[in-house]
Length: 334
Image 1 (cartoon, rainbow, N blue to C red):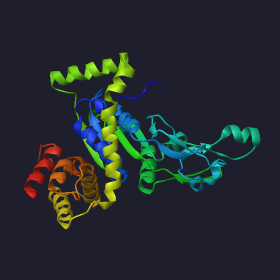
Image 2: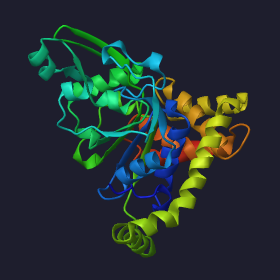
Image 3: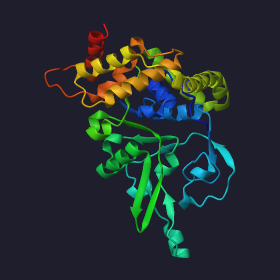
Image 4: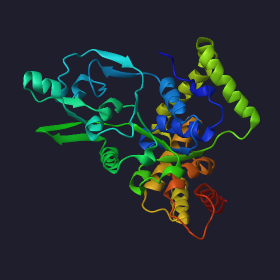
């Protein structure tokens, strides 16, 4: 099986790459929503980052990727205490997936052959401690959206059906992508994403040529191409791991808290999730860049990602959400 396209070899899309790196440092940021054209590298970046990250340690045979034997759910009947390393999981949630496939269901084969009720884990179990990727998330069926909202809120998948009562951890970084021209995302789900990114096809001829050149080399000379970008990938991975260690020590100045609140109020953001996401993202960026605490330079960079999708629509303002956030940043953080 061919290795994913190297994360460091992706041309441009700097905001999208930064958003993915920050959620790898602090998964509590809440995932990334990517709006843009087809063929702009959305899934490539997700898989490239997951392949770049160090493997996770799991109990051999555990269907929910538990790190320790005592964390394995009873229904899984895991007898092994051996721990093995596996790549960080990236699970695709297709648009037509049934609720049973997403959450898990009764194991029909075991029920018929042995007369026993047994749980067959779904996609949420496989995504635990990894990434759940949804392409065309704005076209997802409403009942699946409601289900994801519950799991994203609690980090627990609960299944009650056919006499089964099952619970298991389901903590993952939710990454969604879509084309806004094909349908809007429900506000309840939109608010659950920590960061949003708008991406477009490169409008520079040299960038487009370089994209094609690198992709062609990846397809025709995969071994040489992977070796060529291995060092760059290792540098990014080491920076992410260092940032994870530094994050608990990263301070939160009162001035930064005030800036977060003033920005949200200036933009009319409902609730407090915007401030919390802004703060967590700024802290993750500060730790990634080796700063002891976030400052206004960090807030300026990540405010459009953290607040752009939380704005109310203003029929009298034709500016894009990103432009409105940038304008507020210039006014509040002048």
